[in-house]
Length: 226
Image (cartoon, rainbow, N blue to C red; front, side):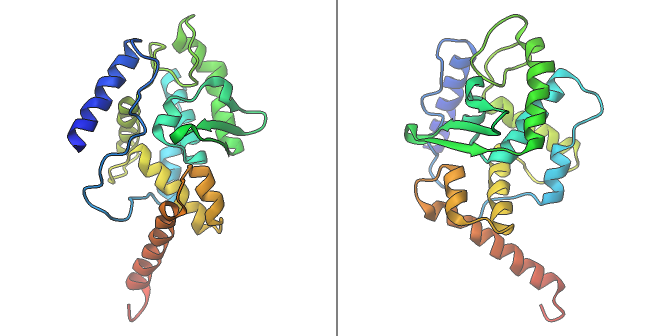
């Protein structure tokens, strides 16, 4: 089942790139969980390395920086990121309007730094990538086309490798890190649930287990009788 869903997602992503379809109808269908467990997360230091922008301000580098900053600032799903319309991102108010699973709408805030990266991308990079074309989507490919989930997964993995992060990093890793870091910083569970777009708060509660797991590991490593 997992393999079939992956193949179908790739097929519909291809149709979107070829402009046969406007969207991927199964983008938000979750694959069956083969092994249950706590999600992988990055440390705050590792996230900082991921978000470091190289000195060479090339168009694709600026686009990638804007995507990564927005992803970590909001915790949105990769399908919501690549399918985000320009009109649903407000730098002025610092919010994105997300139409998530089941067509449920939510407003998610982002920080000033993410806003600066997005504005820089919109003014310096996006017009170059579009090459006088038009696109309803905020983020486009190097040829002005529609960004796919698979392509962004490749980009984020490349950035992790360049920055010396040995973990297998994916867009979902950034989403998990967003939630875990918020809760570790004192955010309430309901607010994190709203930002993630979870219908069931039990889904959000897994991140409290992640934080407890980290505390237990720190205790084991550093306590004299751990």
